[in-house]
Image: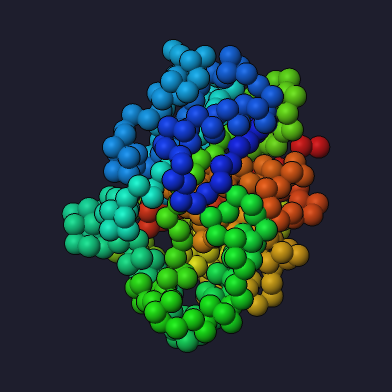
Length: 396
């Protein structure tokens, strides 16, 4: 099968974008990616759109075909929407890559978008609960914080750690991502915080959401979009190219941690990463930067073992050794991550790929990781139900 390259990328500002609609986010994303790739709409063979719940957030399902409204040159070209909870964007990337590898198309436009802030917090919580196993979870008020608190508690129980030990490690992750985002002009939050500042916040400013997760352990409710142009290897390209060397989506049980899957280790993520690295013919030691799914600080922490940076139960070693901090062996979430860059659900996975692409072509949106040659995306949907990993490498 032929290879796939990314030849252009766009990322909107993330945040509460009152001036933007789902439609304007879409339109700006495709225009921006095409401009960056130095391609015209006529060059595109198909469009793949990652969007979690335009119906819940914006009363708009069937969003993929709006691409024709945005750019009439796309009329009569195939367009598909992917929905895989928070992994919707990376799923769109993978579907586009598979279409190119199959030989059916040469070039694809991939868009990820979500307009979440049109709803209040209660409405957002209800919409996100649709990504749970509804009969046993969503209908019984089991939310995302509940599920990932279960993961944190399961990890503490298995390895005999206390909440007092866990909290400083989570604060370090939050601080790292706040600090990285402060250098990212597109990030939702651009205020650096130290771990000590997070730890010293009074309960009313950092309330417990679901024990042991507090407000500053949670990702953001954001609006935003991102887009990529993917092209078959060997096509003539004017834009800077990055190879999508390996990718994999490992699906798992549609229920919370500790029912049919581990509540102390991210099994699906580990499986996906191993397969993507194997496809690329490299190991985690070859990866200099990673954009990973820190929907909660505990998620990023447990991804350190899923990626192979540490052994399970010793994830904190990547924090204490500064392995995942700027200047470390594998910089994690140089963008600020979901925690501070923002988390517009459908845009997240595409944004992760866009940020790695920009790093590997020496045009980072924010913090630069010097001399990076290989990057990893790890995007999770639901309670580890969809686990999308991608390996991107700089072209020789």
